[in-house]
Length: 257
Image (cartoon, rainbow, N blue to C red):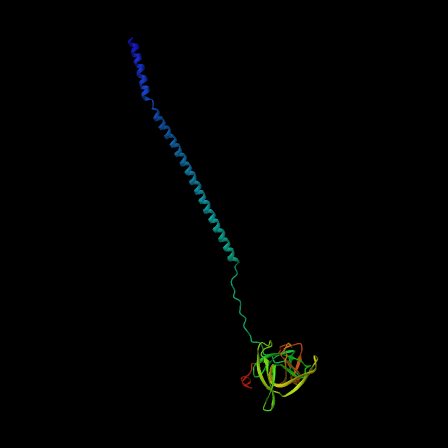
C-alpha cells in the first residue's frame, strides 16, 4: 500500500513538472509574428539591394551613352575642321582709266551715228536727234509758237522740251531769220514754219545752225539733223547710235544769251 502511494505521488509530481515547462499559447503567437517580421525585413532588404543595383547599372549606361555622344561630336568637329577651306579675300582689281580714243573721222569729217545726243545753248538742254541725210534742213520741236514784232523784225516765242519725254518745257524767244514752207506727204499745202538760229553741240563740234520750228509731238525724237548741218562737216554711219560723247558745257556758253 505504501509503495502504491509513493508511485502515485511520483506520477503526479512528474505531470506537474511537465505542465510547468510547456510554453504558454500567447508566447507561441509572439514568436511566430517575430519570425514573420524578420522574414519581411529580409525580403525588403533584398528588394532594396536589387533596386540599388539596377539604379547603379542605369547610371553607368547613361554615363557610357554621354561619353559615346561626346566622342561622336568630337569626331564630327575634327572632320569639319579638315574639310573647312581657309578664307581667302578676293583681290580687288586695280581700276585703269580707259584709253582716250580720238573721235572717228573720215576724210577729215566727223562720223556720226543714226541717233546722237545734242546740246542746245545756252540752256544746257540735251535732247536726242535723228540724223537724216534725206532732210534738207534741221528741225526742232517747238510748242505754242507765238509770233510778235520787235524793233521792226519778226520774232517768235515758243516752248522747247527739256528732255526727250517732254516732261517739262522752257520758254525761248528767237528772231525769225525767214519763213519756209515744208511739204509733207500728209499735206498737199505744206506747213509754214519759222526758221531760227541756235548754237548747239554734237560730239566735239560746237556751231550755230538754222532750225525750222514745228510741233514734233507725234514724232519719236524732238530734234532732226538735216543736210544743212551735215554738209562738209559730218558723215553718217547708220549702223551706229550714240557714238559721240558730249563734253561739259563751258561756263561762257551758259552765260551767253
